[in-house]
Length: 595
Image (cartoon, rainbow, N blue to C red):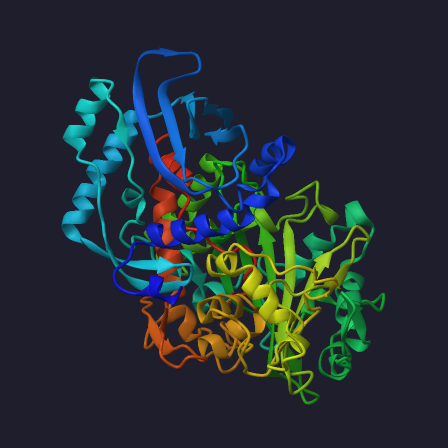
């Protein structure tokens, strides 16, 4: 299937083909009426493939809407008899057409005026920049035309109540309108060393209680008024997990006792003997917008993406001062938002940061207004500790020569605990041993889903534990001679923690955001900014596939996120945004570990 990567293919066509194959492969699971009715529950993560969307302005609008919507889904994929849609916060149900089992219809409220204005804007943008980079997942696969519906003809169709056919390619993301340095990957020292919001224990600069300090973030995560857990104990209990060998999903995670000499023993304590979080040896490296990790809101998606803080762990020296360690900690918060209008508004808040000078008092204040929404105590009352934190990830070889990535969740016990490293099988399966074929069997059995990056590596496979407890990087890629399709191998490997941070993307130091010295910005990987690119002006880089040695793999992840944010913040939820989500061809894996 590697031929789908050649030429100037539109991302919609690529992903539609893969998703169709995946759903066709899965169709046997939906033979009963009950199974068919339950299918819609998973559409937020894996939307069904759409062949056609038709929209008609009603001559006599009613209480149920002003437009007739018809969605024709691709054949030979399992579909329920009715499909609930979230249309700007209101649930409507697409009903199956008894004359055509692939056609589903409903009356909806639709903002035709806004849709015409969107097409007028696209027409002007197309004149300025007719070609755009096209992404298949996280790879650049060519260029695509920036297209639009003719606004004059569209007005005639609306006025005449004619059927308007909505092609998928009018949803190709708009030109790159946002500044990644302002709105996606904030690394400027004027921000990450803001004297009122950050603190550096190595230089004693800043405010120990500032909004972006490790102290404040972990104190809000511990949420003592709700849990009774003291923040210092919360952090120390977490760090002590490195002191003993743990077992996760039956796989041992070997102890790294140097956590004591390098971190815990030199961390100052308060008068009660607890870790003094106001003097945390954590240097802020980046504040990161990951709205691109959201799922499909029109099918009831409840995940709006993430906001992240990346810290470098510093080693205190006996004579005073600190030394840099290759040890990062990433706080990854789920955004407590639901529905297109709320998510779009949040995207627009990020985009609005472009109007302010990076690092100015106005910019930093506006950025805090954004981050407070997901970092504050009780941001997600229904979750453990009331915290919006999804997971914490550590990434280091300071405690042991072998790089290791660990993942932690807040449990109902109110403490952080080791959990599986998502999307990554245990390293014992990464072998060409002909008697150990679980990796090949998994990839071959789920080939289309893996290529489309809509797979989830399971806890167990073929009756045995499969998902790893921690991810160790030995600068190898995931492969097995029995894997039928190298493109499937590549997508599986790219979505693992170790190979995304390693050989599959030629990230030699296992870090996409590197530790830094005071006064300078963190160095970003080529995967993020490309060859010679910067956070302000990202570009791409191309490497040959590490297994076949021939297929070009081109990355530029900040460009992809930039395009995605521009599309999201400019969408109208009652017009083009709704239709784009129905087409749902631009899918993003929800479990990648990249900063």
